[in-house]
Length: 585
Image 1 (cartoon, rainbow, N blue to C red):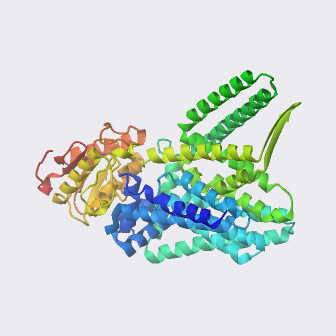
Image 2 (image 1 turned 180 degrees about the vertical axis):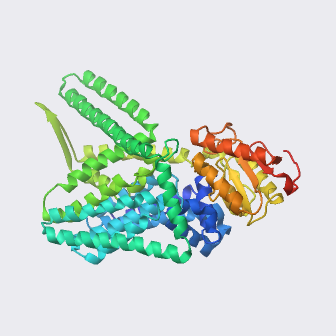
Image 3 (image 1 turned 180 degrees about the horizontal axis):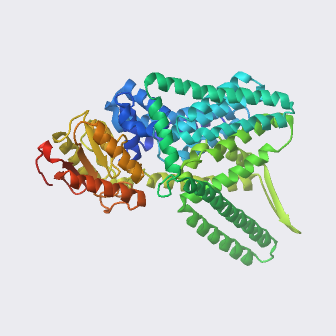
């Protein structure tokens, strides 16, 4: 690859994430994270149920402290783009000694396009990806060169990653890389054990460092309570993070990976066989007919596949798993670093979705190393030979180049189409998202006209009933209200509907005992997890949501709350002693 091509690819890598950060207004996860960041130093008790994400909240809080919350939602997305740049840079440094540089930058570009799909946010997923790539870089460096310091630092980063997102505790399993590297480098078991002890010491040192910092900041008790609450969620059959449900997510990933990857292999084998047979036929007319039928079948297959994002993710996982295993077990001392890199890259991809209730989507955050390695393998093929009996198919030179180009074109077409239509919990039609909301913290953010109107109405009305710094009870998936209004969560979480009914009752009783007076309530009339709200109506009906909703309805009735403001999607309610006025829009 010449310098000009490398510069062009690098510019695309830099510019691509910036294309998508303006469109889309999400009231759920975005609000949850931003409220955590804005309150972690200001009033940590108000977001204590999210302390299982303690380090994520601390880093987000530092971002807001340095730049101020005046940047608003767009600042949160800029921070996410910076994390992408950091992860890509580390992936480049990690793979550079093992991958041909002609293939590395194109592979990284494809990784950026595939992984993010306009999901550029500073949250526990993007931080998890960054921490794993950083740890992989240090661990591979340490295992290849026998450097205990690098192994310790890698494990320390993995240990800190546990406080980014609690399920990242499975990152400790990367200790297996010590024994794999020892096996292929023929290192004595005693030396392997020594490196494993260094790894364990680094991991435990991170835990000690984080716990000490929590203690000094007065966060330790809240963290312990949040972890205890996490285990309660794992044991709650009605909850969205029940242990069996999370285990089922991993099972579903591999079941779908096996089925989809197997289907692709069968399709490719059948296509090759058809092309091979047609090349042996004497009649040109029959050959052309066979090729046309094969082409039509291929296009139909691609068109069907084109609609299934999860299918594409699982095929990438399946292909990546096969190629990295191939790399891992190719002998030769000159390939030791590539073999170690492949092992660590595969391990990261497999453990990232553990603990997620949406494992298919979050799976991609573990692929910053896998995807460039997969495409380096594909780009590096010099020829393909296959055949049965006297039938042979050979692809080399220009033929293989054409197949590669077509394959990459299909991959990009699918991924770019998915990115174009995917804006997290906002409209799939980007031409509709051209409207802003007149609010300081939403400057630069565009959404649909309907959503901009109802949100603008709400933000204009809220200051008449609650002031910045006051406690507010916002529920029905409207976490962003807290950040936009500068208010604090009454129920110790900006997303109280994630509580089980029992936990919801507990935190409500606690708030009534600890908080001064009854709170103003803001709630949605529809499901903000639906991409097309406010056009779509009706609340989400999960069992745990229905339980929390009943508790709130009883609470509102018992305390004689009245609707003092409403529009077509939101409501504001006040208790009688607040002296509120009634207004209807």
